[in-house]
Length: 159
Image (cartoon, rainbow, N blue to C red; front, side, top):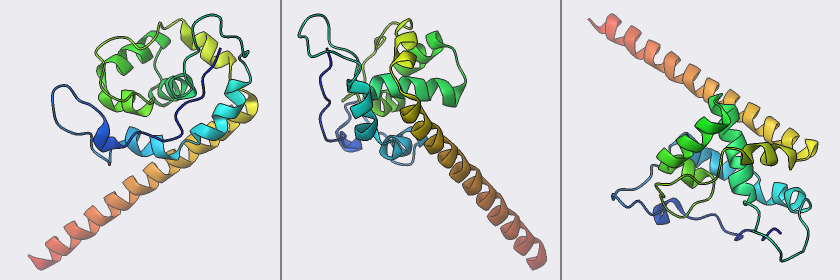
């Protein structure tokens, strides 16, 4: 059984943090959460489930795909993915939670099922996205380094 997710991404300002404060818009996971085509991928993902009302509902596409993206980006084990999500409000926001929860979101054995549920087409879209994001991050780092070097040269000339 699968239930389609709410159409709207929770706003970062609405993400509940029990210890106060707010998430930062410029965090890489917040930025990436806006770039992943969750709705497009959810259509393929939902096809894996029957219309039966029996059993527990499947984890959302945000949780399943989000966990796989986290694993790939951080190059960590399935168990570590679950622990990282448990500890990070940014990762919890990324996978679609409405607020911080200090508990494991799912058993690490679910990662095997998550991997099985995505078509090559969906994985291809995500891989292209991750490559594009990586290139953008690298370009930004390069630009920042070049700007820093220019400032240092101007300072040196000024002395």
